[in-house]
Image (cartoon, rainbow, N blue to C red; front, side, top):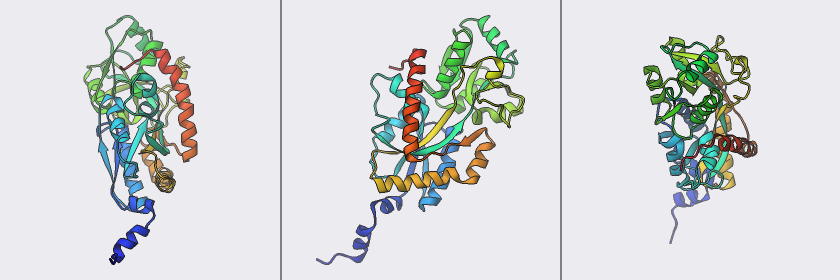
Length: 316
């Protein structure tokens, strides 16, 4: 039987090249409108250009990223499903759940880091406080009456605000939402009284006066908010909780395919226009190789295990 030339040519293509000829999905673990979604769309556009294919963002919200992570972990290891990992999905969940429906280390191939994003403590414009000490005094005078929001149980925003609540004396109620956007909307409406949010989610609302920013988690003040103090400046030295995002692929990929996808990720993060877009919302590129990303995840797991265990937060 004579084999068609087209079939022979296709068979001769390397696995990596054939995989990139197909559209790629990038699973983002939160709904549209938040910092995670913004980063996902910036990465999809740039990686698609590098790989000469369409990279389509697919938002799968729920349980602080758990829904998306479990879904992505079950996809074939063929390079057509990428996942935008967060602190929660790749680190926190290992210590928050006794029985996790996926293994962050076994079920994904790390490709590279994407961005570091600062946290900011925000309150509604109508709340009668203007500084962190005033907020702490206000909370302590009203034990059990203040609610804080987050993008979901076990999310970075949840744990960051939990840490602040403990530093402020505790006795606050956590109200989880299905993503950052609805949590910020509830904060503006006064349904919750405070939140440690990612800067990109709240920056425009702070600038418009709908929210008040009391402190940022960076060592130095942000250029975008030069009048907002750091936590260190207001006497809270223990609040060192930057957020980060990484790119992983579903399954354990063959080495040539992993390298090809990692190169596209690195090119996207290294693109000057990517840094320019991030600077406008208080974030910055976080650029690491595959090996550096793996080492980074090990360090972060060691660090956050102690924090999560100390916070005594369990989700099962």
